[in-house]
Length: 160
Image 1 (cartoon, rainbow, N blue to C red):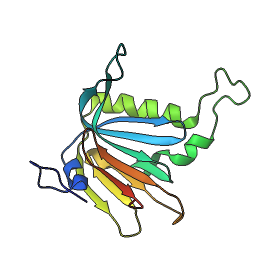
Image 2: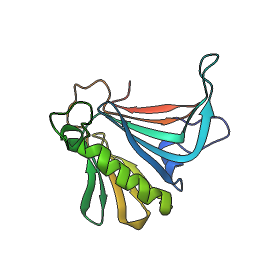
Image 3: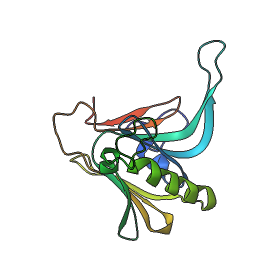
Image 4: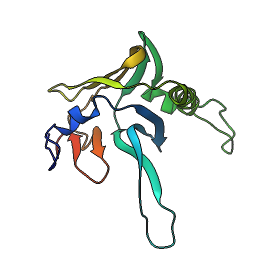
């Protein structure tokens, strides 16, 4: 867990105090954004890309809870809401993520604590009884999750 010049805290602890700002996916990878929006240029003649200052990319089981209730989980990426129609097929994850995103746009929800356990579990506790649990289940996967600071360092599990 390295640090960058000008910021003495390890990357994982820099999430504390940051707001949870986005819940999404890229294919079957969960994408969870924290902090203010930043932008970065793409190749010439392309618009800048905008994203959160920090992001967690998850490729292993995970869930987002509130008050002991699962709001969204990685298995929701496997469940279609309208099976059979490939043009309009939506995943249960997409609907849950949209609902949670609407909540985050109304209620600022900041990170209270972050813990990485030796076996790779990543536990993020937020305000309003919300928690994010990332739970690697294989020692063979090349990357279960990644925490990144835009324009900066990345922390992966397993480390690589």
